Structures are given as structure tokens and as C-alpha cells.
Image 1 (tube, rainbow, N blue to C red):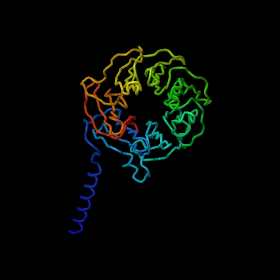
Image 2: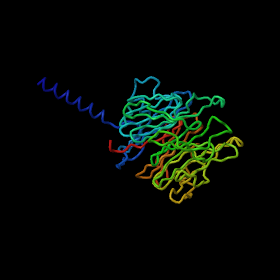
Image 3: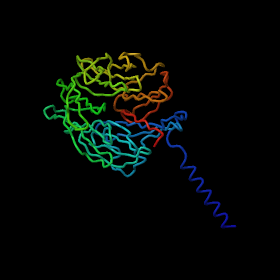
Image 4: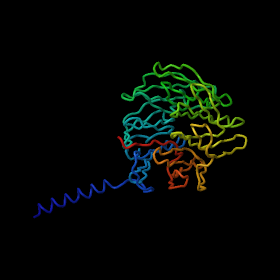
Length: 372
């Protein structure tokens, strides 16, 4: 009888432990959804010098939001995720985060953010992928606003099977985002350290030779660049913060084809729609002007100047992402750029579904599909 009771007790404890382990983690904020999108990661940039970049995960399948999942999955990693996260992408079975001031790219498992490897790149900015390779922009030198020390940046080519840098190519000063289109890599150069002498070109790199084959003159201080399904490239200019405003530009067949008069701080292209947040700083007034826009990629026209329909006030819009299936969209709030930020979820109709306080400077999203 004692042996029987012991077996029953052990089975009960195992059952309890299994139930405990299977309980959802995080904070319940949404209703469960079943689509081809399993969830999303959110990279909180963190404050410069604070070593407080962090990674969150929202699970559509149970409606739970888990903060700082990188720390949970990697308790033994020294210095946690690092200092200033600038980009986040999923490629294949892996999740990649560019950590600018820590001079590295973190390579993680897509399913749980466990660290796999680290790629060291000085002053790394943004990443993109094509044909089994990762491409990363670098300012080349250290973070230094002394314009006399500025040097031309480069793009690094990294093998995603070995995580080794196999080649580099020099582009413009302070290169930012990239986009792949028709065998070419397009790089938005900013010249961000060169105040009043900003860059204004997109570098064109032939991926087969990994050489710069041309430049496209666009506007000063370029930042974002996205390709759409029609073969257009959408490029944003930050302007010069004085007399030249931030604007959106369209490139087609390597030629500047159009300027759209909307400020852009972040954008998201989904199908034929471009969702835009604009936070335009003026050194003359010492203040920001906040704006939103929905642009037709097909017609090249502004369809709407108010994504948010319920009057929700966001102090400093910082990042934007759109669920490609449900068309729910997410806007993050950087607040005063020193406090904890906020994430807002809006339905496709523009009405708020939920909001949550997250890490500092919540910036970049990566959607996880169910086909692991």
C-alpha cells in the first residue's frame, strides 16, 4: 500500500509540475487569435549608455505579453541584450537584433530568443537578408559627432550558416536602412554626423559582385527604405531640422520618380498601403510636430491623414507595425525619450484595443509566423 501511495504521489507531483510549466507567461492583454501569424517580438531600443535594450514577445495564440524575454531565455549572458537596439529581423529559424552601441548583432532562436551566436560589427545600424546572407550597415567608426572624424560607412556581408563576415563594401557616410530588389541592394545614406553637410544618395550594390554600381540622388539625410510588390522603393528623408522638411520619396527603375509631402519618422508597407508616423523636430521652434498618414503605394497619393480614429493621444510616436493578416496596427510611444515607453494596439478601424507600458524607446517589430 505504501508503494502504491508513493507512486500516486509522484505522479500527482509530475502532473502538477507539468500544469505549472504549461501556464501562459506574461500579462494577459488580448483575446486569443488563430492566424498564420503566431506572435511578434518588440525591440525596446533603450537609452544611450544605459545598457538597457530589451526584447518583448506577444503571443497571439493566448493573448499574453511577455516582457524582457531575452533576459528570461539567457540568464547567464553578461550585460543582457546590450546598449541601443536599432533593428530586429527574422530570417529562417533565427531572430537577429542589431545592437548599435554594443557593436554587435545578436543571433537567437526564433521560437524563444535563446542566444546562438554574436556577430561583431562596429557601430552597426540596420540589417536585411537575401540568398542565405545577412547584410548590415555600419557607420565604420565609433559613435562620435565630431564631423572631422567622420568616415564613409560600409555594408558587411555575413554568412547566416557560419555567422562570419565574408566581405564588406564602402558606401556613403552614415548608411542607414537597406532594401533588396531585383538582385540589387539599395542603401539609404544619411551623413547623420555631417550636420549641414548631409548625404543625399542611395547607394546601389550589385549582389552578385557585391560592388557599388551606382548612386541615386534623392534628398538630404536619408533614413528608411522599403521595397513594395510593384518594384517601387520608398525612401524617407529626415530633412535638415531647419528649412528642409522630412519627406517621402519614390524610386522606380533606379530613378527618382516622385516626392510625397508627408513627414516620415517610421513607416510600414503592407500590400499597397504605406502606414506612416511622422515626428518632425524643428531646431527653430524647439518642438516636434506629430502627424500620421496612410499612403497608396499604387497611386502614390495620401489616402488618410489620421490613422487613429478614437482620439488616442500618443506623445512621441516611435515605431509602427501592421499585422499583415488582421491589419491591426501597433504604434509605440517614446514618451519623453527617458521614461518607460508604451505600446498601443489599434484595430484596422483605427480604434484602440489595448495598451501596455513596455521598455525604454520601444521601436522595432518582427512578426513570427506559425510555420517554424
